[in-house]
Length: 425
Image 1 (tube, helix red, strand yellow):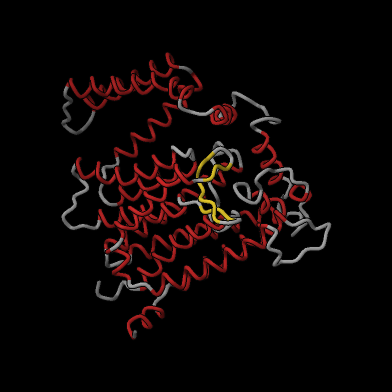
Image 2 (cartoon, rainbow, N blue to C red):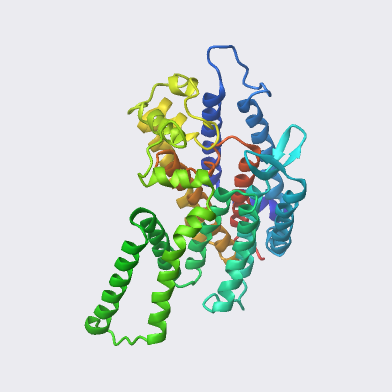
């Protein structure tokens, strides 16, 4: 008991403060997005989104208390079981899930719904930390790399099949963790090159991109062979495999785009790439989002004075497009403040992760920092038109109990591990 009391005093109160600031600002923004200021309102009206969010926040504080009372050793010991339970919860959706907006991603619980994919992120972070922290596990071997990728692939696949491509994309953030723990940087370079080739093929077409790619590869190989200060030698078989891989990837773009992507996803890519300017159809959300943010100017229109927010110009404004409320009512100063707040928050997690004596806690810390960073960047990028709409919430801001609880658990499991870093594991 004495030891647990000492751990409480070692809690990182900076992270606690940043968490409370984000949650508080998030609730105020949800209130502004969902209240009708032409009528009387009550803060604790449970028939409203802002009223329900207060309940969600209260329940998240109960989760915080339970996590902080846990023994840190149990978190690591049962990481695998938590991961397996999360997979079962995702599988169960196909039999017992509720379909909302075309995705079977929720369990109906009375008047509420629970989304297990929000909790699967924490479970996957625990599982990958448990695997990589094993002293006998060498991430530089190909077989072990496949094991690590398999842990990430299973929940991502189950979530994709719901279908919920946005939530599945989050698992790409774990590659930063794998890189930090020893996976060659070439994996990241190959991933970036594959994405660029995919987009270039959509824009310029198969013949041009194939010719340009093979020419650049050939010039690169010739330069390295004749002018590199290092004595590098290339096997003909590996060069042929490289050429063949690039050819197959570029040739598959058309099939994947037309047969794997849904029509609304193709439409969003067309708008993002400038091939379609349908601002009244599929591009309506993004166009209204940009107009709403830009209308706030430097200082914004003031709290509850956003006429575009009050006029419901932006669909899903309390969830995926919550950032537009900040832009309109608080202006550039408000949006910059939120960006800085998230930056300090993520940076603090990384700093604390580096201080961990336990490799399990360090890897878990980097995992959640990557997840928060991915959500933060993709959501805001989506809202201002840099990325296609994929349905990724802004942590602690977007309305919803599952998202809030999932992010809260992600953070406070790390806070608990950090508080116990000076104790024996």
